[in-house]
Length: 336
Ligand code: BTN
Image 1 (cartoon, protein in one colour):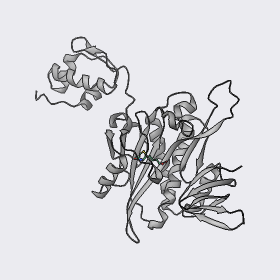
Image 2 (spheres, rainbow, N blue to C red):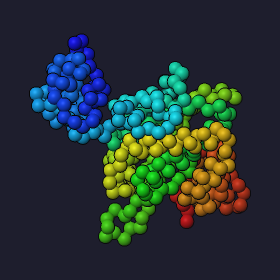
Image 3 (cartoon, protein in one colour):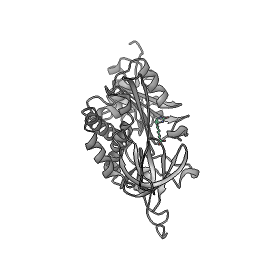
Image 4 (cartoon, protein in one colour):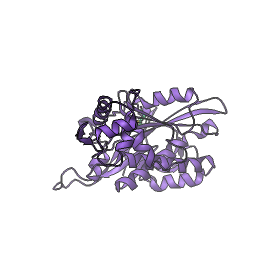
């Protein structure tokens, strides 16, 4: 008996849900019953419901909601994405961890996920509130494309997240250029005359390291408000999937769908199927063909959201009918 034991080993023996005596379990693991009890306590701390004591025996009654590798990886149906999985309870931003790993040569498809972020980042230098219950993750990519082609990847990612939310939560979603996913939310009270409207449930943040012709790495971050609570000051703009669909959602299921979709769309991106992807994006976008107000670095502009360019830019038709290409900015509202 060397007394060394891991939570994973205890978990693998409890997984079949049958009751097993502390003595038998300790024997199989080659540890003392005290050491075993300590690890069982740790698993309980992670949210596993394990009734029992060393004398009477243990069994696994309820699984945890956490995205622990042993919970998440068995259900993951991708070839590469997420297979190298870095799981953290708390970090400042998964973007920072993923960037460090990318610099050290971590392979394409490495996923960094945190249950909570203390300094989550959004687009345009904004803060991204990341309490427990959401999905906060960053994926390392190493596309062999020209750096100028990379921004289109954020549109690709938003489609992957859009489809995963639609399929996992069964709610109507739309894309808001460039890469926000909005979901249909009902009016706040059933008696209210307030119409249904869309609110943001997910966003994408893309960061890259490149030289003139070569991409070293891309870190694709996605944040989805799943079962978490939205702070009051943001509740007119943002909504969790739990609130939008009326029930909690399995984050494990949603994450595996996101990664599966991402891998498929990314494959098409690498094959150069940009026109097809662009068409797919436009089909999912509520704002296309509508008059919009845009906030850009030089202020506010208006026009008709005519098309998406092959680099992901928005093509706006201004009131004087001239076309303007917008590479970065935000749709403030549909004008009509
Ligand atoms: C946005 O819509 O502004 C983009 C939000 C991106 C948030 C995610 S959460 C995981 C990853 N880590 C971060 O700090 N940001 C991204």
